[in-house]
Length: 377
Figure 1 (tube, helix red, strand yellow):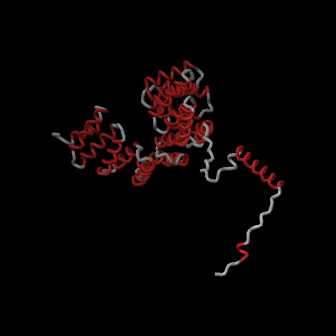
Figure 2 (cartoon, helix red, strand yellow; figure 1 turned 180 degrees about the vertical axis):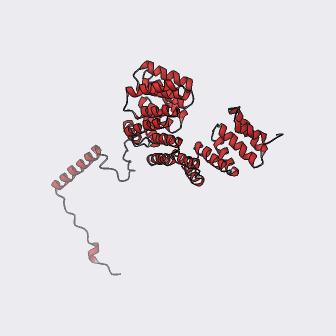
Figure 3 (cartoon, one colour; figure 1 turned 60 degrees about the vertical axis):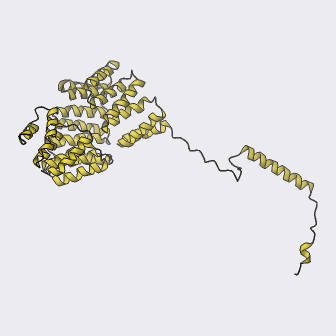
């Protein structure tokens, strides 16, 4: 083997300059100091990097978002934002009060009562807060307690426009038209810039069958708050009562444009078409409501009635039974379900539903007539 003689020559060791060694030492000391003071800059390359912490979103940020979402008519999203505020600040009266008001609009009246009670616990002397509990109780069917809370709110502050407005709504639900109208007008005198108060005034008029006047009140509410989908729904309902199906559907479509995630506009549009004898189109719209929310019980009630009206009893039965399973308690649903069974020759299955209708209303004429169709049963 050939060996390169130059390969095995010993290396010549040169003496390093002491100045260079001192400079290197100073540089190393500086690096160690930098590493100690700025561990986020100079890291051990073998250590697992620590993730950069993400700032937690503040309650005030969620509160601002909730208010903006409400103004935009995005009720579901606003509810979610207010829930976050309440989660981060359990003593937030504003969050619980607005949760109660918005949950009512979504049909979650029990949740609204719970939120309103929490708000009252935090602010028992606040008239508007106590009035909100009165409103939630009214919508949940607890009329006596609702009345007591509304009167309590007015005792706390006789100038509370909301207290008078909610009291007007309770009087309307109790059938006291005169007092309802007096309180509604009183509320407007105290605050004519509130869309909630104009909405309640419209409701009082609607309950009295003054549909044109109610529509005017609802329009006033919309002029103050254009994204109030719930008011568009109310306005459409009154237009439907006047027989103006086209105007009603237009109002419901406005509501859908504002809140496309809600099943209520599709349900209302579908029922409007059914009432106008446009059966097939109504069915399509009602099914859209159920697609958006498979647990929206009112859509099942209307869809079942649509099938029933057009004598599709086989189609009506499972839809009505779904409505019952979802918790609906309705004389109409009971007797239409019972009659649907009877009309296809199944008296044994139909009679129990007719009897449930009679439990609700012992004078229910359709149920009484249905009993005669199954003699000896």
